[in-house]
Length: 328
Image (tube, rainbow, N blue to C red; front, top):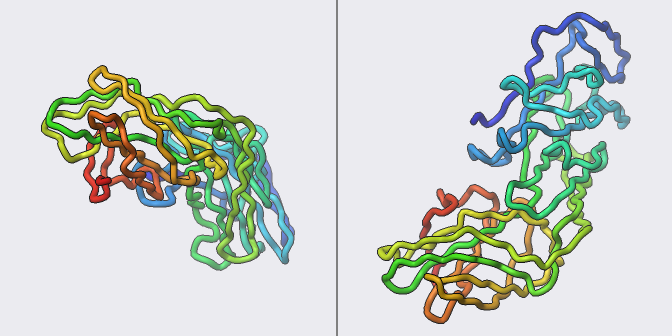
């Protein structure tokens, strides 16, 4: 998969000729002499999977506005962008091509994916709808300000997407030299945690490098267990932890309770234990809860917190990994 795809504008018929005043927004089907605004989905960090994945999200919603003398003019008012015929496109009957206004001081861009997760988007904020799931994370683009006169003005816009959910997975290492099959794995909170929420990004465009602050508003809570796929640890693996093939994408609510229960079957024998979650779940972070398994049952020995879902040194689902912190 490519790191990004651009919107290409091919075979455009001459339907509308638009003249512009100094601070006007420019749009239409074809405006000779002006450059169309093209957008791309690019990763925040250079991972082959750290972007809007084809097949998971083939669409996003984008907002763009030009600035002139402190006044904003909307150029793309929550445009739906879809992946069509191997390219990104936003042109349809109601969404005309946006053009760079050469008289603007700057352009502002933000976006969210997928389209149906974006409940509101404008110059000041964007609100996303989040729900705990095992499919994937909603994504938000970093706010981008392109100044007139910069190398990026009038060129393809690379919207850098990051994950809005956090991701939770489990890993196990065993004691002893026998084959071990761990099944019926469940993590259950002692009290209800956030299961649905809205996540609002508020933007500060006052500098050339805009920032966003996040606010989580929990709308539903649940104490349902997280169920994970079985893990098999071969007899000769006495040092490496093995991850489950299940990942949970969770609402990053800092007010979630800390107490949890882990229950599982180890070679058919039911075992359980309580543990405290010391981590405050944050957007975009990956949390691996590592348990050791002995005759006494499971014991949490480490929580690995990573800044991106895929910076795991090739920790694949169901894969093995070693770490100097895998000791109690």
